[in-house]
Length: 353
Image (tube, rainbow, N blue to C red; front, side, top):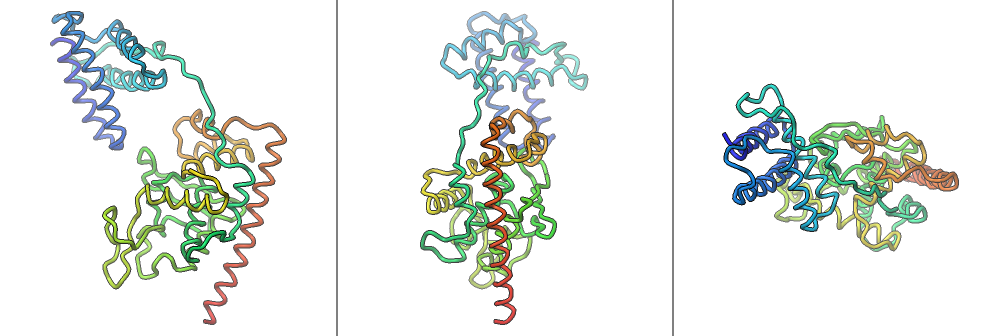
């Protein structure tokens, strides 16, 4: 068995094992892409006579030549590094004792020493402290239905105070929310992992969600398992949760949620092109600079590597900026108290209506 035949057999086994491990479709596609790129390069070397017919394994020289080819083609160092990380995962799998002896490698030909150095840059600040403070306020600055504003405000407040991803927000149901204990249950987050995220201590997230539910924008005749945030508009991107009456509540798309957030942030602050991920970055910065606890931030964001969390949030800011962060969070808590009073008034009105 020559090197390419062995590579093909191992690649097929690795991808099947990855699917059995319940990795996400995105991860599987990434594995297929990277190992496919390497496969094409190995075939090219075989056609050039560099990989001989009697070569049984992919060698260190083959990998180093692949790195040179990628760099010469103009690939960024970060792209080359990511491909090498995936290739190393593949060849590490090939060394495992459960791999048939006739296929097994003794050692991965990809060494971390081969990884090109990449600069570590913090993601730039998405929102200013003044803009965040404006988003805390429950003050409608644009013309829209009251129920629509309550929904939009709740979504933005939720992400700013929990750091949930776009998909995680869309996947929430009423069952996922524990307002009494201030918890959000995230099911099948990135990497298909479950986690519990605490709402903010000031209670703005809980108050915003309660206000949204009191407004009745989410139909009351649908089950708690239906999407927390959805739409009744008839679009091809979702199937109705209910078909009785006029209500056809279904999950929106990522594009729908992103457009909603961008429009709300612009109307409230004048900031253009704000994405849901920008709100997530802002949450990370506020949390790290108020608590200084990177491990807690990593758990909340659902990151497997603390370095990613640190990059999201930026390094701890100087003392003056940490004091400004405390002022932003104080404004959040004040907005939460005002919204709780509003919710209490709405509840009384509904009781006597």
